[in-house]
Every structure is written in structure tokens, then in C-alpha cells.
Image 1 (cartoon, rainbow, N blue to C red):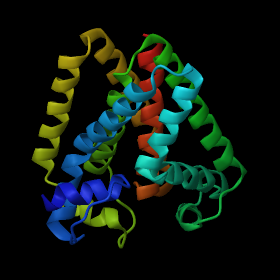
Image 2: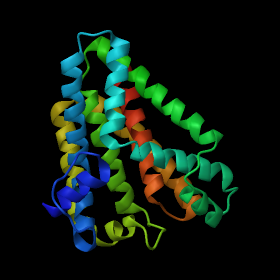
Image 3: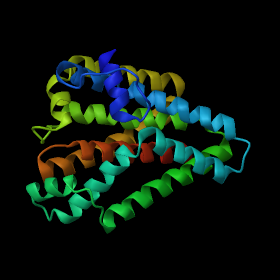
Image 4: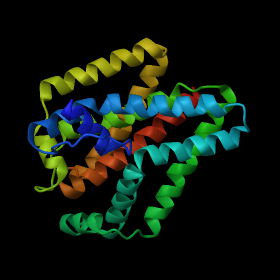
Amino acid sequence: MTAFLIAIQFLTRIPVFVEVDWKGEAMGKSVLYYPLIGLLIGLLLALLFAVIEQQHSMLVAAIVLLGWVLITGGLHLDGLADSADAWAGGLGDQQRTLDIMKDSRSGALAIVVLVVVLLLKFAALVAAVDSNNWLLLIVAPVLGRTAALALLLTTPYVRANGLGSDMAEHLPRTMAYGVLLITLLCLLYVLHWVLVLWLLAACALVFGWLRWLMLKRIDGMTGDTAGAMIEIIEVVTLVVMVIQ
């Protein structure tokens, strides 16, 4: 239960009225719950969609997107912005890239990337409302956080004193692969297998590309790059599910 509560506190702004010790083994185990937290976020978004679906499609999409940002507290968007700035300003230097990620200020590229990502999400949500395709509201958060689990499982964490260092060090690897398998089986249960193949292909391609960029630039990952991964995989999932 401690690991589950850590995952909720780390990935969302859903209040948890219990004091939780953020360290050690529980931090590593919390990563196993990332897809489940994605499911929780998706269910909340689907509920919001159901309450307001009779309104104009653009208004529904805007409110659902606002709810999405509020539930997560914009945490992953912040990671995306910091990563964009770091990649642009790091000039290929690892330490400079890491230093820029810790800077709270946002540059022009960060703003551009955020606008593009939010615009793509909004457009996909409008299409989803028009087609009553509420299921993508659940699948996108699940796959985004599954990608974060896969990233922690396969990629070195480069900040020795960061929160992610405990997660990476104590992550139960065998159980993590089991969670990935269970997530895949759940997708096959709720979606047509052809759509699952398209989603896996698109997400795997983007995941591999982003992971390669991380390894090339900073020899691994940080919390910011994990947030960027979540946001981009969510967008990829939304777009694929809309066009299929």
C-alpha cells in the first residue's frame, strides 16, 4: 500500500491523507504501479467526459484537457519543457544539459514544444468527442506511464541524489517485466489486436528514439526526461487511436 500511495503522490495531485515514507524499497516498488495510476487518471478523465459530453465538442475537449493537466499537476509537462530547453541549450554537453534541466525558467523552445503537444492533445480530444471514442482517454495515460516504467527498467538514472535513483535501484525487475506483460494483455482484451499492433509499433518507435537521444546526450535518463516520455507517448497514443 505504501508503494501505491507513493505512486499516486508522485504522478498525480490526488490528495493522499496518509503520511508516506519516500525512500528505499517502497520507492522502487511504486514504479510497478505506474500503469495502474495511468488507469486511475484515465477513469477520472472518462468520468469527466461522461458528465459533460452533451456540450460542444471543442468545449468538452478543452475541459477534459484542463482536467488532465490539473490531475497531474502539469508535472510531466514541466519535465517536457525542461528537457526541450536542455536539449536546445545544452549544445551537446552532458553537464550543461543536466544543469539547464534544473533551471526553473522556460525558454522559447520549451514554450513551442508545450504548445504543440497541448494542441495535438486538444485536436485528438475533439476528434474523440465527435466519435464518442472515450476509450482513448484511458489508454493514453496507461501507455504513457507504462513507457515511464519501461524507461526506468531499461535506462540508467544519471542523477545520484534524485528521487529516481531510489526508484531505479530498488525496482523489482522481474515483477516489472510481469507488469509490462499484464498491461499488454489488458490492451489486447479491450482493443482490437490490429489497433494494439499499431499502438505498440508507434510507441516502441518513439520510445526507442527518445531513449537513444537520452543515452546519446546524458548517458541515461532523469525525472524530466521521464516526464517528457510520458507526454510524448500520450500524444502518440491519442493520434494513433484517432486515425485508426
